[in-house]
Image 1 (cartoon, helix red, strand yellow):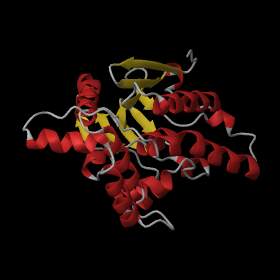
Image 2 (cartoon, rainbow, N blue to C red):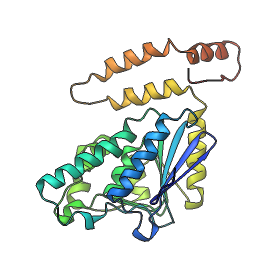
Image 3 (cartoon, rainbow, N blue to C red):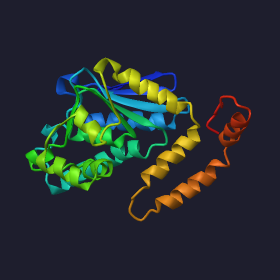
Length: 260
């Protein structure tokens, strides 16, 4: 599948998706979001892909935000549709995906870029990365899930501070408040993401999917996350991977999971 604004490469069971608009600091326009949707949907359906790493081209930006030039002529209806469509075709697809997604944040992650990273299940940042939600400086608020996911990650008070001040965080600050999981030297960013993903992919694939679903249902309106956990826990007992995991434990050997 050929794309114009993203690069897709598969190494082993890891699929790399790189936003490739370096001269625009990898800003997300409508076309890029559509391409991301196609690539992500295909990756989640593919039996050969175990997990996804998302990053940005170059060394300056992961994604420096949405393409603001597309906002100028929108009215209330257009703005509402923009946010709803973006959330449904990309950000929620990532967050609710049945395979792990790691954001390798290699520079600026601002506005929609930080929202993209927050939709991923794990975030690793290079030491030069800077993050923030500057939308209020444009007379807007985050529209791709930022108000909700930032609050879940760092708490209500800190989320409000960051959104209302529009301040940028260094990678070290982001690590300190729990916005990212790890900070590494820039040259170590993708190797660290690969190392973590390969460790994850050594685990049982169906159990990974159940864990993601259960964690996602934490504090979700009208959904009892504890009940989700109970149901997903029970489903695991019906998998061949569970039988393999128990057998490997009893036989003191490494399990060979098949995702069945």
